[in-house]
Length: 193
Length: 193
DNA sequence: TTTTAATTGAAATGATCATTTCAAAATTAC
DNA sequence: GTAATTTTGAAATGATCATTTCAATTAAAA
Image (tube, rainbow over all chains, first blue to last red; front, side, top):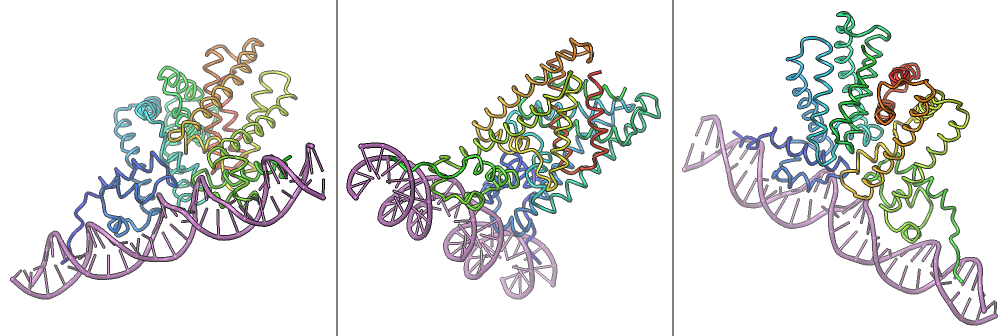
C-alpha cells in the first residue's frame, strides 16, 4: 500500500493563504509557495493540481476561516442588532490586526481576477449570494422584531450592508484609526434603525 | 537638434490604461503594453522609464480622467445635495458602462499594490486625502445650508462617503442591476439628511 | 547639406515563470 | 523482509518576464 500524505494539509493551506494574501495571485510565484509551505514542488502539484486550483482551495480556506470567526461571535448575539454589531466588530478587528495593509483576500481577489478567471468569477458570485442571504436573514428578523425599520426590504438592506462591508474593508487598508472606523460603522448601520 | 517625440503621449497613456485596467499591474506584461500602444519596447522605456513608473503615470491619467468627468457634472449642481447626487450618478454610470467587470482601476490597484509598493502607497494616501477633502467640503457646505444634518462632522461624513464609494465600486463589479444600485445609493446618502 | 542627438527596431540579456519528468526514497500491507 | 505504490527531490522544460544594448533611422538646427 502507498506511502500516505505526511504533511498537514490545513497547515499548508494556512501558509499558502498568507503568501497569496500578501502578494496577491499574480504576484505570488510557485517558488514563493514552495518556500512558504516547505513542500516540494512536485508535492504541491501532486496534492493541489495547479497554482489556480490551489488558490481556489486557499480562497475556500480563508472564507471558512472568516466564516468561523463570524459564527463564534454571532453565537453570543441575542437579537438582530447585536448580530449586525458583531459582524462589523469582527471586520473592525480584522482591519486593526492587519498591520501590513493586506486588506481582505476575497475583496482583493475579486478586484484582481473576477474579470479574468471564470472559476474565480463563479466563486465570487457564490460568495456574494451567501453573504447577502446571511445578511438578509438577519435584517428580516430585525424587522420582524421591530428593531430595524421597514423603509427598505430586507433584501435591499442586505445589498447595502454587503456593499458597506466591502467599502469598510477597502477603507481599512489605509485607515487604521479605531475611532474613525467605529464612527464610520456607526454611520453605516444607522440607516437600519 | 534631435528628432522629437512623434507619438501622442495621451493616446499611449489611454491605451496603456486600458490594458492595466483589464489585467491589473502584475497581470500586465511589457509585451502587452508594446502590443496595445504600438510603441517600440525601447520607446516605452525611453519615454516612461519602467513598467512601474509608466503605471504611476497611468494612475494619474485615470485619476484626472475620472476627476474631469466629475467636475463636468458638478458644474451643473446648484447645492450640496445635487453635488452628492452627481457624484454617485457618475459612479453609477461608470459601473453600468463597465461591462467586462474591471471595476475601478484605483480601487483595484489599492488592493493589489498598496502593501507592496511604497510609491503606490503614497499615491493612494494622497488620493484618499484628495477625495475626502473634496467630500468634506461639499458636506460642510450642505450642513451650512441646512440641507444635511449635523449629527456628524463633515469630516466624519466625508470618510463615510469615501468608504461607501469604494464599496459601491466593488459591488458594481458583479451587480449591474440599475434598480438595485440606485436603491443602494439612495440608502447610502440617506444618513446625510 | 551636413551635423547633431534622440527615436526606433530587433535581438539579446539573464532571471524567473508554471509545469513536467523521473529515478530514488519512503511507507504500508502482506 | 518483500512487494506495492506514492511521495519526494532535483533537475530540466520551454515559455515568458522586465530590461538593456546598439546600430540604423529620423528629423531639426547649423
